[in-house]
Image 1 (cartoon, rainbow, N blue to C red):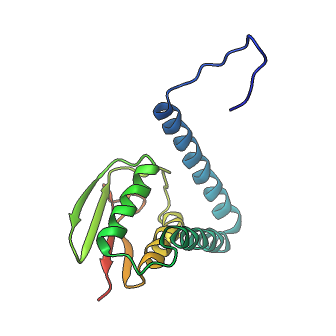
Image 2: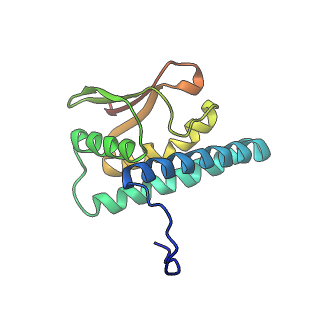
Length: 159
């Protein structure tokens, strides 16, 4: 925290309110940056977003998995829920079994308008999932920027 001179006080919001506001601001900023990158660089911009997102997902997987065996679909599914919760996402798990985990989200926390940008950004989740267990796939079966009413993020065992 920033130390203020004696006698000067700034209002401190409860952590839950402050955190929600900060996350919303950061995700809106990321969306604007991505929109500008795509507008300015086109396909090369999407490739840059995808490369950065993939590297970040791989990095997170390394941090959390360390040298352990590949995680089960249940463990990876629960970790994805944790990621969504950290992003202040609303939604629900609509499937949770040993072959498939589906997370339905009624609105994008970013909120992306272009499916191309969403696809490039969610390379992070795909890399994270495969870093936690290379036998799992991650895809978005329904996508709000593509015109669907909800996003459906699906984790499944590769066939």
